[in-house]
Amino acid sequence: MTKELKTQENGQTLGQPKVLCTVDALGVATVTLNNPDKHNAFDDEVITLLTTLFANIASNPDIKVMVLNSTGKSFCAGADLGWMKRMADYSYEENLADSNALAQLFKVLNFMPQATIAQVQGAAFGGAVGLVSCCDIVVASDKASFCLSEVKLGLIPATISPYVINVIGLKAARRYFLTAERFFADQAKLIGLVDEVVAVTELENATQTFVNTLLANGPLAVKAAKQLALDVAHQPIEDTLIANTSERIAAIRVSDEGQEGLTSFFEKRPANWQSSDVKDN
Image 1 (cartoon, rainbow, N blue to C red):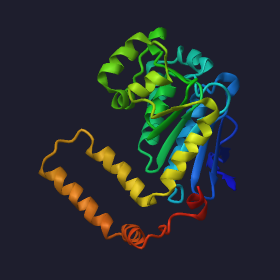
Image 2: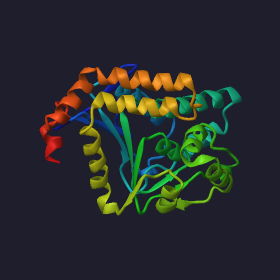
Image 3: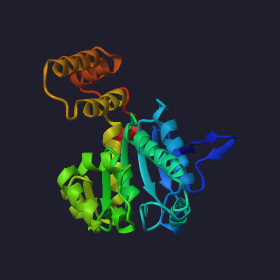
């Protein structure tokens, strides 16, 4: 059973039609880009919708996992052409405001406390590579393709660059930022942008397998583990970091969830956060 996650801004219900969101009984939110006629390209309206939805999901403790997917053949074609045409006439200050709004979208997605999964069925160009880079797990079909296409238009992939470089590394970024060449799912996996490549007919099943795996784990521990990865990355291994990580494991061991996890393991029974639906899967 699913329900629509409704968000409001200025009295208007957000979430439809260009972006949809449902939350099921297990606490899995699915955010769907829903503008297939334009290959799910985003504009200022979609940026606002996504940012609001991601922020609301992030603040909802009942949501454990978020899946980001889309309708149609393309995952997302990046910026909408009409929006880009409007921006061409913007002043520097107007362009800066637009860029800041887009940067905020990527920041909110990247730092969501919940586990996030991107399900990529087709083309992911420009800013869509940023969306993918901000997700914890990326499942792509063997038909998926990627392109950091900005330099073809005399632009640069600026707002997405911190997240893309963090995922694919400096060397690959220097190549694909400069060439704007199109590459496919197998290459995306080699450089770390994609985690799993499956046949398009198996894409939903592969995503659901990851969802079930995540739901079988302690929900607070998953959030803490994600924050741990974000906090420890690129930090020097010295006394302050060592002390901090020791404090984190000590605190979670004595937490209610940590105690339940250890007790259920030794008693050889499912932990209390595992619903019957997850156990059956």
